[in-house]
Image (cartoon, rainbow, N blue to C red):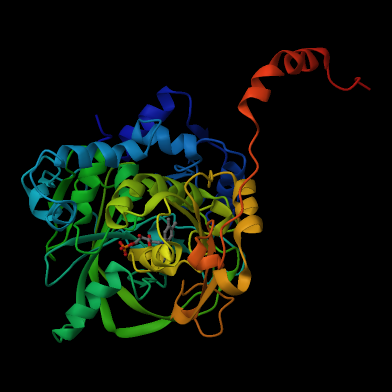
Length: 484
Ligand SMILES: Cc1cc2nc3c(=O)[nH]c(=O)nc-3n(C[C@H](O)[C@H](O)[C@H](O)COP(=O)(O)O)c2cc1C
């Protein structure tokens, strides 16, 4: 059974002894974020602050995505890849090709249990509530102010009628205005551009906080833009999301803790930031559009969800690793060459990606690189390393061995210039444009090396068998170094 809402999840975690209630008074100014980061770095479970200075009646939850174990617990499985594999194998009974399957996902899903369902809202309108009355946090000393760090921005694509739920940071300006930091390539700004094409500058938006953590995870996930995020959340929860339609037409989760209805004014851009971001640096200021609040809704005794990004591994790292596992089966359908992928948490998810392929022909590694760069948000990757399928890409030493034993830099490193990178990347000359590097760390075919690839050393199996007794004796006699 999926969690109905955030409270359901918190009750579950509490029943497992995995919720740390903090009753001492804490401040939204730096303190909650600092404690949250300390908890994540220490692999502690979620923290629930019940006494937040200046915000009586509100509780604040952080560190929901606290480790890979936490992610597995949330999804109720030890094998996150299994979620997509099960889903795809169910589709497998339908007589359609793989590509058709992907193309027809939206229409297939409409038939199923994954569709959102209209329900009565658990929240009600509060005329006194505004953006200054929520316990939004300041996460780093030089941040421009208080931010909504784990709220979900919901828009509706005006052409395809697809619902977009996305986690973007939101800088609170005053009671009724906030800046939405949606990057150019993301759903929110893509949909906004379509409204602008139609001459509309008031984009209907809802900002929602405090939902089933799987819905919030979906909002932070790189679901292909044509696919409805409610449908995808339904797949991950194995049950459609309960929703309510607001007056501005936006569907919001019916059990959300707080909801802010309004619009983004595309004619009103203001400087956003600085903000300490997921690269571990402050993002410089840039122009983003203003959200204007019209109505606010809240549940009784609301819980407010926050996080803090910074040097890895923080919560976004464990979200990224879970995305890597859950999306791998889908990615393998789009790029059949791929065997496995590792987006190491210290590689910042847009910095370094390692992929293995079953190599069958010359030039295949470069082809795989270009396919990866052509796929959704993987296009942001600055460095791609391709290795052979016998390399365990989750063991960085094996990847280093592959790099050292297969790469001739001049031949095997491909540099792409002036390509789209993460707009937060401070290393590139003019963000979001920067260069990319692909490294082919696969064994080379004759066409690639100019001669046969040398034979690798391998033990003689007969000898290994023959000496096994001696070896076992050697091992049994070694009792380790003397203790001091
Ligand atoms: C804590 C957190 C903060 C994020 N902040 C931003 C942000 O400010 N701007 C942005 O474009 N993406 C941000 N992201 C990444 C998006 O949530 C992610 O790219 C997601 O896939 C959104 O995709 P969509 O626009 O296709 O829905 C953040 C992710 C997390 C987990």
